[in-house]
Amino acid sequence: MTAEEPPIEPDRPIIDPHLHLWEILPAPGSPQLPQTFLLPQLLQMLEASGHNVTHTVFVECHQMYRQDGPEELRPVGETEFANGAAAMAASGKYGPCLVAHRIVSSANLLLGDGVRPVLEAHASRAGERFRGIRMALAYSEADMFGFPCDPSLKGIMLDPRFHEGARALADMDLSLDVWCLHTQLGELASLADALPGLTIILDHVGTPESQGVWAGREAEARAEWAPRIAELARRPNVLVKLGGLGMDIGAQVGANNVLSPSEALAERWRPCIETCIEAFTPARAMFESNFPPDNAAGSYGATWNAFKRIAANCSDQEKDQLFRRTAARSYRIALD
Image (cartoon, rainbow, N blue to C red; front, top):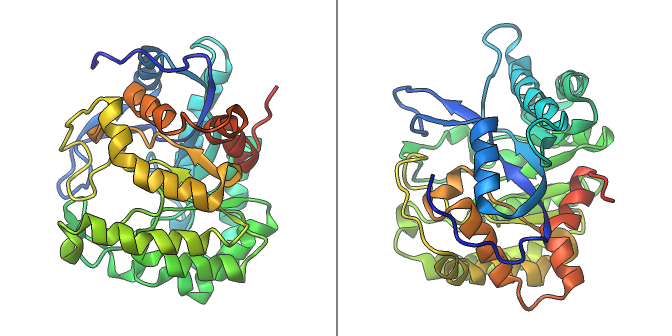
């Protein structure tokens, strides 16, 4: 394990609202290189970081899907997998952190109202831990993670069937996590307008596009991204996760790991994160690690140190919102 930086403000409680668990096996054509990141590896990482992470939220990553049965129900296997890790952590035998205390699963919202039995199946496996859905939506005209994007994802958030499926989430008091690129933020705003009762959580700051025609045009992409973020933030039912800036969407996950210290990460990430905090306010913004993918840029400890450096001028109340209370409200996590 990489040697960690000493943690800044080590006693500050943190809810990490975006962590994965996975066992990536060798598979030709996979966007992810082989890697094991299960409960033992996660716990070792948390301990080494020195940060006071009290709870984590598991976010879907296409793990442990069922191999038989109806296609639409196969993602329920991932909920069973995450719930098992959560049960282990909740036993207290593995330390104080409640890993996978809340679970964001996957379902095909293009099923429309037919997605309800899938959501009910997730809930029956994980109970109150199951809090919402994320579906693969990020689309680029160029490759992502070294492979072409599925063309069916283009314009998917405008599909009436998608809206109907998302309405089922709202009816069941579940949230929708969305990872999309900045070129799709207009679609997301339209969805938020159509379903004002649906809590939508934008992952990874709505990643500024960096592939294809955007390669080498980081400043231009960010200049186009910023007003779209400000416009999206006008929808009160949308929140934002501050992170995901360390992963490299131009290469297979795990291919590149050039670890930077927290000072360099903070300098690199500050423009996007501060723009989001200004637009959404700390009441609708939450820091996220997005590990393991963000390990391409820095260690877990350095990532949280970078966030603490960026938030240094915030009030203590604002920091508490950014590091745990917004996440707690979003995913219904009770705090003392």
